[in-house]
Amino acid sequence: MKQLLVLLLLTPFLNFSQTSVDNDIDAIESKVIEWRRDFHQNPELSNREFMTARKIAQHLRGLGMEVTVGVGKTGVVGLLKGDQPGKVVALRADIDALPVTERNDLDFKSTVTTTFLNTETGVMHACGHDTHTAILMGVAEVLSNNKDKIKGTVKFIFQPAEEGPPPGEEGGAKLMIKEGVLKNPDVDAIFGLHINSETPVGTIKYKDGGIMAAVERFVVNVKGKQTHGSQPWSGVDPILISAKIIDGFQTIISREARLIDEGAVITVGKITAGTRFNIIPESAELIGTVRTLDPKMREMIIRRMTEMSQTIAKAYGGEAEISFQSNTSITFNDPALTAAMLPTLQKVAGTDNVQIMKATTGGEDFSYFQEEVPGVYFFIGGMTPGSTEAFPHHTPDFKIDEDGLKLGVKALTQLTFDYLDQ
Image (cartoon, rainbow, N blue to C red; front, side):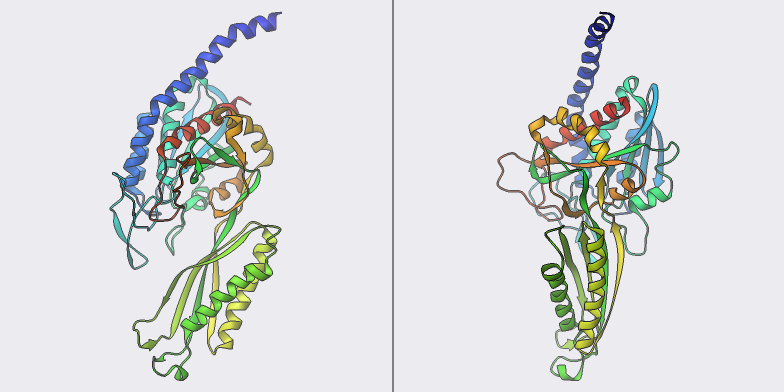
C-alpha cells in the first residue's frame, strides 16, 4: 500500500519532468535548424574546421559547460556534470564537410571553394554532418536546462575529420582517443547517430553487432615507360595497366568474395596520369577504398589486391606497388547495450518507426570509439515521407528534410537520461 502511495505521489513529478524536457526539445527545434543552415552555408574540410569549432565552443561555454578546444586538432569537447552522481556517457557528432561542389537550389547552399589535393573544388556538407553538429548542440542545450535530472556526467564530443584527415596528417576519432577524449572522466558508454537521405523522416534504423564496414584507403602506383603516343610499342603504357588492374579488382568481388556471407566493395575513386594527349606517360596513380564487414574477407581481399596489381603490371611489362591505410574499423554496436537502449528508441520514435536494418558498406570512424567503450550507432530519417527524389550522400544534389532533426535531438537526449538512470 505504501509503495502504491509513493508511486502515485511521484507520478505527477515524473510526468512533469518528461513534459518539461519535451517542451525544451520543441522550443529548440528552430534554433537547431538555424545552426544547421549556418554550418551548411559555411562548410569546412577535415582538420580545417576552425570557424565551426569556434561556434560550437562559444555555444557550449554559453551553457556554462567546461569546454576543451583543439582536441584532435580542431575538435571540441564539452563536459556537463549532472546534479546527481552516476556514470559518464559520451555523445558524438562529426563536424567536417567534403570536397564536393553543391548543385541544388537551397537558399543556404554552399558557395565555398578551395583547393583540395591540387584540384579546385567546392566545399559542401554532402553527408549531413552539419545536421549532426546542430542536433548535438541542441541536445547540449536541452540537457543543460535539465541538469537537475541528470544522474552522472555527459561528455559532448564534436569530432573533426570523420571523412579522413588530409594525406600526411593525423585526425578524426583515432587522434581524439589518442589525446585522451574518453578519459578524465572515463567514459562508460557512447552514442552517435547519422542522418540518412533515403530513410523517411520519423524513422530510426539500427542493428546490433556490425552495422557499418571497415574501410581501407589504398594507393596503387603503376610504373611504365614513357613514349610518343604514336609509338606505343616503344614504351609501356601505365594507363592501360591501370585499366586492367581496376577490372581485375572487380573480379575479386564478383568471383572470389563470398558475398552470401557479407558484403564487400572495392572502389577506385581517383586516377592520375599523363600531361598531354599525345604522350604515353611514365606512371599512373590509382586511389580508392576497400570496404568489408568480415575480418577474414578483409584479409583475403587485401592479399588478392596486392597479388593482382603486381602480377597484372608485370604481365604488361610494368611494375606496381600498392599500399593500404585503415580509415575505419567495423562499426560494432554492443549487443547488450543495444538491447538495453532499444526501448528508448521505440519510445521517442514509436515502435513501428524503429526498424532493424542490414549492415551497410559505408564506413564510420565512430568505430574507433566503440573499440574502447560500448557504443550504439543508429540512423535517423532525413527524407521527406512519400518523396520520389532521394539523392545519395557524397553527391552534389544531396538534400536533407530538416523535419528530421528534432527526432535526432529527442533520441540522443532520451538515451542520455535513460542510460544514466539504469
